[in-house]
Amino acid sequence: MATDTVVAEDAGGAGAETAEELRRLFLLDEDVVFLNHGSFGATPRPVFEAYQAWQREMERQPVAFLQRRSDDLLDAARAELGRFLNAAGDDLVFVPNATTGLNVFARSLRLEAGDEVLTTDHEYGALNLTWEHVCAKVGARYVHQPIPLPVTTPEALADAFWEGVTPRTRVVFLSHITSPTALTFPVAEICRRAREAGILSVVDGAHVPGQRPLDLAADGADVYAGNCHKWLCAPKGSAFLHVRPEHHEYVEATTVSWGWGEGGLRFGSEVPRSRFVRRNQWQGTRDLAAFLAVPNAIAFQEEHRWEAVRARCQALARQARERIGALTGLPPISPDGPIGATDDPWFAQMVAVPIPPVDAATVHRRLYDEFQVEVPLTGHDGQQMVRVSVQGYNTAADIDRLLEGLAALLPRC
Ligand SMILES: Cc1ncc(COP(=O)(O)O)c(C=O)c1O
Image (cartoon, rainbow, N blue to C red; front, side):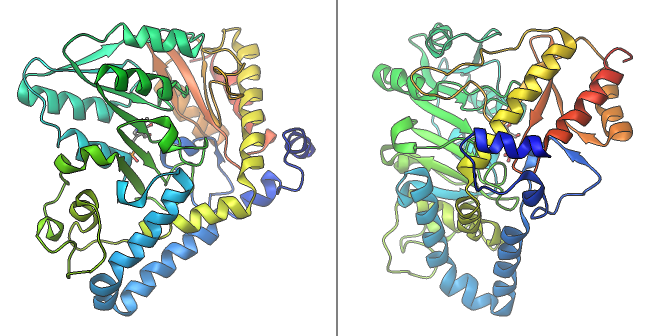
């Protein structure tokens, strides 16, 4: 416990609450060592209560809420999210998750036979399926460019990726923070190259909002989708799709509804909104509470000095990586040092660390059953890994328990 306080001060976090104090604000089961924030996030009590308050507000007067108030409430929530992401509210829509956001865009694209969508071999499986589906329908190709491990420098990574570009490349699609390997890819540089080459850039930022500062104006992707329910700790079912204005015209929506009519959104609101927002904001009757609670999640992190919390988590993730490396004797998948000109290392609050060949399903199950540790095992190109997520509520004792479990199970499974 004392270690956590020291780490916080080292990381410039003096005055921020300790992990134990933050843990009390979350609804997580106290008996579980929760090192998998990355899969679905977790929501602190004040944000969850705000979410439920929105639901109660809707039930109090459903017609007034959904017919007369919802567009203005959503506009305000989008504006606040836009402030957080440095993006114009008219270029942003709420979607239930990053998968849906990227589907909205991928399925709006008019690819042609022979076109290529270039991606990496570190992408999230469901989105590989999305792009394979979209490409297969028209005879386009979804091309995986290998990014070998360990990564070395952002320039080398961008060069390795760019080797996959051909005259037929219409789209580049990649994660900002990858799912199996938890690496931060140099998307600003890749988007810059894509723009110069006249290629569309689409970024999967599912793990970024709340984990790394995000500046959508500077990062330069044509299209960027991010989750609020992961690292921003907003309720499940809150995410966004950001599309630059030059692409609004052809972006459709998963559901064709009132926003496709002439009069703007649903009930003739006078407020001008982009065509992209009009088409996507009203998707039939649905629960809007998770979207409306996004500003509450932003406020929660700002009030609880999340910059300092993030730095403390990053330090703990680094310790986890070092300790697992010392246990297995396997080298890390990235340097520890800064990526490029920034002070950021290749990983932030989530780190993937190699482990020797094991029966992954058994190790995963026994870590939970015998050590109460919730942590995913991932892999890349035959290398198995444990992916450790560190959120504000995690302590050094959580990492101790993981190490205890790994030390016991890796040699035996
Ligand atoms: C890189 C990446 N993209 C997309 C997703 C999908 O997120 P969601 O299920 O919220 O759409 C995940 C989920 O973990 C992910 O890791």
